[in-house]
Image (cartoon, rainbow, N blue to C red; front, side):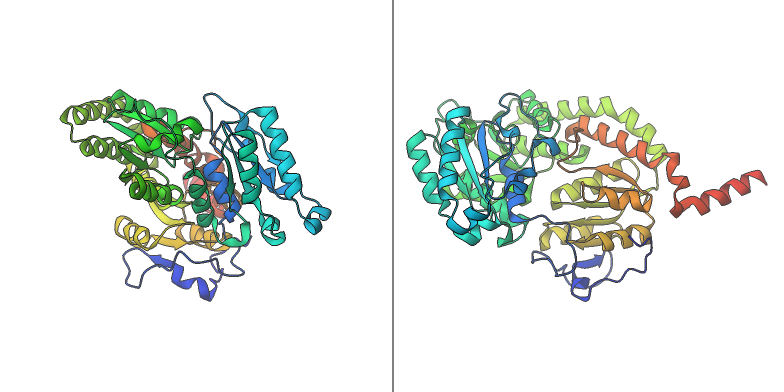
Length: 462
């Protein structure tokens, strides 16, 4: 990777990049990736697995070549408080003869054998690119197996070439919709919610559930972090849906509003401001002064625990700059605010799946001069990190090598991490990680800053 800011931007990418505070049209977004840009996005299949995979008591089987099943629990941080079936990566392992003669028989046998062996509450069958090409009738097989086994067997139309990761989110929501509305709701109270789009990375759903239950709100289902099939079946009985990952779960939330009259709110559980706002907005939705008082008391208690340490780290981090590149826009909003809490500014921010409204909001909330980018690629990100001279890159597994090659501190905020970053305790963990990497002396010895460090040393000696 060239360590230079002279990297050219592809002409077709120019409209997807803007600066906060500058004039210009809306950010071009929501489109297929430009050929040659080596997008950081994932495919439809990946998007569907991201959403459904943390349903822990379901069978997840990939209908396709064995390589497509490599995306397993081992590289994800989603936790389960009970069943561990989701940790397995089952595959039909399609071979050349299956491609020629079809893989339907193989899929049906695999489903019957696996369901008999593991006794899952439901099964999800993910179609891969090759299945879309050879035309296996996955829906018909799922229907037959469901009738034979008496559990829901759900086809996920996730052929990778059909669109972007966002289309995979939609395919996952449409599969889950078949479960919603099929369970008993008689014991669900008037102050009840579903948590949607929190994937229980490092136990985050447990932290958030605890906050809501402490102020008197019942959590009916966590869709899909530490998810359970029976909870999803009855989640239509909740009075409100809270959507944390808006890109993945908004489609399901809108469907539930239309079909069952359950309204939804987009929230974030990252950072002090957004976590507190989620609790307050939920309490206000139920129009209960008692709930609101309890929410205020909880926020005051939790903030008091972490603020002394945050203030100490803020003194070291004040004025440092960060680049943020994440999947969804709501996480980007939260990270901009969380960085401000610890004294840092955001110099580069982008997402894989943001829409026009999301980018308008980023333009309003970021400092003038902040680079805002949709569906970026490694060379663009490297260029902007160098040009803005950032001290930290917050992203996922695909952004980590970009940061380290450039000699920049890195914070993993994607699903591969093993650290809880949600809620108030998560804010403390986040700040600890940021402080440790940004203030590490190792960055003074990488090529990007070695010259500056040498000059400082010479000045000190003189």
